[in-house]
Image (cartoon, rainbow, N blue to C red; front, side, top):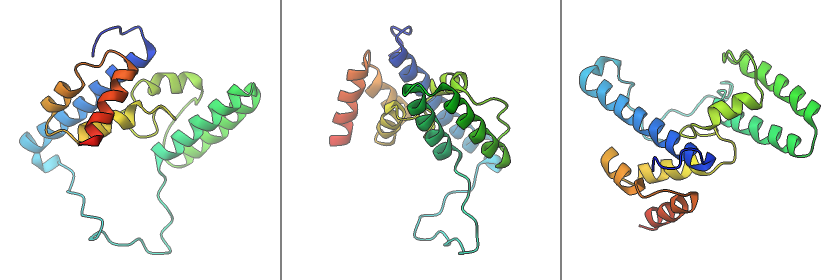
Length: 168
């Protein structure tokens, strides 16, 4: 981990790990020193109230962005550049209507935000974020997470370590 930063896959791994650890530490600092700012605990699914049938579904930014990225990349892979650009603009307008002030939605946007695969949907179909989040969820602390992933120097290492962690 932290080596060969010029390799695109390893850069995604490194940036995703940094983002995951950043969020973990930020949550711990808020809980310890600023508990009045801590979000309320999420109730277990069994206790959460069922949404009323009249409630409109909430806009899921991560899921919508993932779907947008995947479809745009498919269009680009087929050579439909103009269609992909029109599609991304139409999707950008949907994001704006739902309160997300995205000025331009294009491949540069995905390239910039895709290096941080710590949030679901950020990197499209890239499995890096989900695998690293699975590893984090199955380790006892940020230190244990870092010790588990420290040997990663290739994407194959990530796949191997993820497989080992998930098998336990």
